[in-house]
Each structure stands twice: as structure tokens, then as C-alpha cells.
Length: 92
View 1 (cartoon, rainbow, N blue to C red):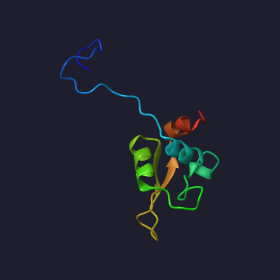
View 2 (view 1 turned 135 degrees about the vertical axis):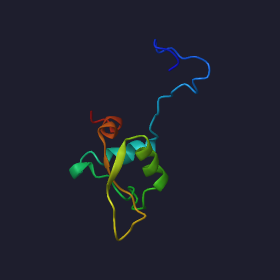
View 3 (view 1 turned 45 degrees about the horizontal axis):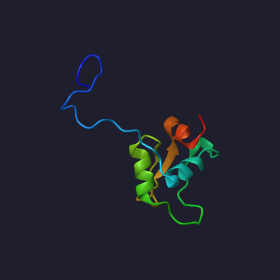
């Protein structure tokens, strides 16, 4: 912010925006609510691998975090819900 009062001034950069989850992100996050440790699925409801862009965008927003590396499939992102992710998914 530009001043001690917290008011924005010119040159402070873009105004912060509230990030909203897409339906695909919400569905993915919700599927981790009933899993041990909040583990998020690797596959969608049709058995297809989750799109890496969905996973990475949730990680960038702090809704999911890496759980562990998968030595058999190092390009797969094995993640779990964060507290913020649980809030977005509707569990808190």
C-alpha cells in the first residue's frame, strides 16, 4: 500500500483482486475432503488424468500443496488440500 493509512496511491501497481475458483478447481478440491490427509485425486471422474494446469493453478493460489514425489511417475503432481483449499471446497 502507498501510505501508512493503507490507502492506495498511484504507482502502487494493480489493485488486488479476489481469486475465484473455477468449477473444475472446486470439484477437484472437494474430492480431497473425504480422503485421508486431504489427498487430491490424480484422475477426474471420467478416469482421465487431471489437467496439470488445474493442479498448478490451485497450488499457486495456496489451495493445494505437494504431498510427495512419485518416483514411478515424476511428472505427476501428488497433492493434498491446504486449509485455504478446504475453505474454497466448502469445508471450513
